[in-house]
Image (tube, rainbow, N blue to C red; front, side, top):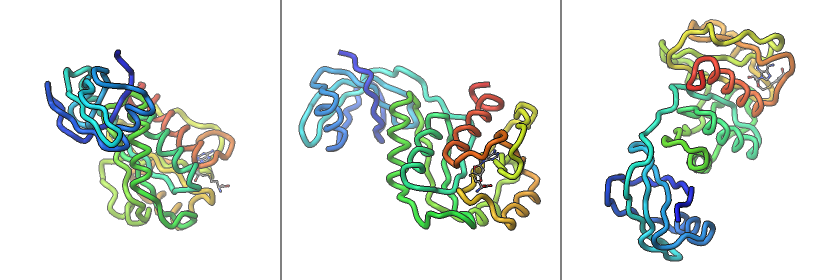
Length: 240
Ligand code: SAH
């Protein structure tokens, strides 16, 4: 049986390579998906593309696979980061999941002057990114960074990375993004309270920053993240 079950494994992939499954992975494959010895699954490790692997051992607490052949070469997402101010847990989870599906390469939660969240569970958010990559057919998992201060990140901002600042004060007609330069980019979404006057002044002074409107309505941060990534991908990314 060829199941379209996809699994991220942080192990080298090569023909005949044995792979070990931890308890969660074994539970998913054998209890949830009801696979057994001889069944095949798709695996990826973020480096070697996607491979077919065969179940060789199915246990309750673990198991083993053997990689057979490559099925897809690695496909890097475009060089796009998402910076967002974490909001309520379920909405933050949503942002990480959708950013992964929409092809962000790095996800950076940022603490802004009006951010509500003091801390995040980086490991949990990274696990969401792994799951979303498994589900959407990606071969590279975006890295979720730990929470960091926006001011510090901007102070060391790379000279060559453009920053799409989703600026709610510009809410109104949205100009198409296709005329913007290509190259490394990041999208910046603010918290429920928006950006502080100091942050706005800082952003306005940076040559890498391109302020944009996301249309006439004020969107919640999770909606704004999806809208901005979609616009960017369609104009400058791998949908273009
Ligand atoms: N409290 C703010 C809204 C914050 S919405 C206010 O009422 O003005 C959360 C974030 O989503 C914003 O910081 C911005 O980054 C983005 N956003 C929402 N709607 C937008 C729009 N129409 N144009 C540009 N950015 C928007």
